[in-house]
Image (cartoon, rainbow, N blue to C red; front, top):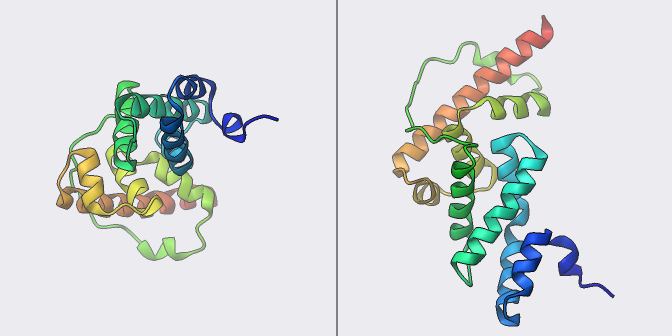
Length: 180
């Protein structure tokens, strides 16, 4: 009979865990199971590629497990951010608020399709996409986002506001091109 834990872990993480002591193995398993879907999802949103997301997820856990025997969610987030930066998948620019008026916001109130929203999120600048995914996707508060990304809470709030405005504009423009 095979171990169900071994079936869910990527091979590199499994090798690392098997070399660990049994008590650390339980901590690794708990951290992996608690965070694997979130890490993969976030990596996917930042790269828009399933294969890259799997690779980044694997490297994220290897990094987090090698740095600490009992990594917290925040340590795993920081390891993920380092992997995204090191792989040149994201470039974090300072959060700048460009509050231009959103034209015809009422047009967005129609039934927006999920695919329109997904396309709009992928088109966001990296910093805004990260803030949006962390806050609206994973439920992080602005304090945790600020600590993870190394920005202020106000910048996190501004980035989220800007991301939401851009998403509305992008959904509206995508809908207009689909109609035309």
